[in-house]
Length: 292
Image (cartoon, rainbow, N blue to C red; front, side, top):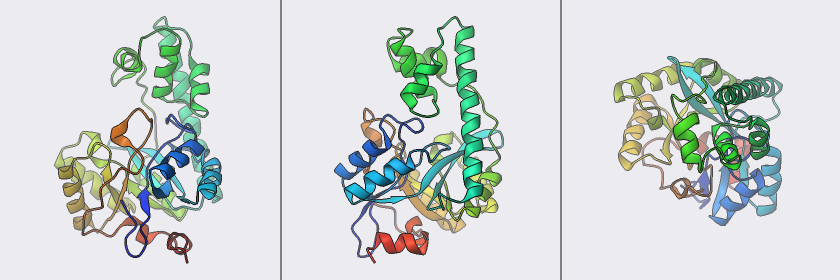
C-alpha cells in the first residue's frame, strides 16, 4: 500500500510490538518494516504508546516516517471492538491520562487471567508473561509462558485448553463504550479508524449498524485492508466507506515473525474510490511524508 501522488512510500498503518502483544521490540519492528521497504509506519500497540519513543528513534536512524498510533479497546453492544488512532498528538495530557487508564485495565485483566489459571491447578506464570511482554501481558504472552513452564507443548494447545474463546483464561474486560473512545481520539487531534471490521464475526447487517454507530460517534476511517481480509471483504468495506463518506486505511496487523500472512508492508493497493486516510493527516505530518 503506497502513499499516492508523487511519493512512492510503502505504508503500513497497523502493527504491534512487545509494548503490547507483539513478538518483536519496537526498534525491531521498525527495522523489519524498513527491510520490507516500508517508508511510513504506525506502531499501534494495544492501549499504550510505551513503545513509541524507541520506535521513533529507530525510525529516524532508518530514514523512516513514523506516524503516531495506538489501538484502543472499546465496547459496542457488549462486544469488544478495536479502534486505531492515527496521527494524534502523543503529548496531549488528556489523552495520556486516558491511555494510563486503559493500561491499568489491562494490568488488572492479566492478574485475573493468572488467578483463574492458578485455580485450575496451574503454576503462576504472571511474572514470566510480564517479562515476555516487556509491558502489559496479553493472552499470547501467557501462552508462551505456559509453554516455557512445561504446562503445554505449544502455544496452540495453551489456547485450546486454557486461553481461547470461552476458556478459563478468556477474561472479559469492562472497556469504555465506542463513542467514548472515538471522542478521546478526536480530542487528541487524531483520526479514529475502525480496525479490521471483518474480524468481529458480524453479519453484513450488524456490521453496517456498527459502522453507522462509529460514524455517529465521529469515526472517520475504516481499515479496508488488513491481514485475513479477502478481496471480497475489501470490496465490501470499500462500499461501506463510500456509503458513509469514510476514509480508507490499511495495515498488516503484524504481531509475530512466525505469521507470514500478516507480514509488515505486505498489502495490496487501496481500492479506488474512498479518500486514503493519509490525505487527512495533520498538515505537518503530510509535509513530512511528502518531503517538503
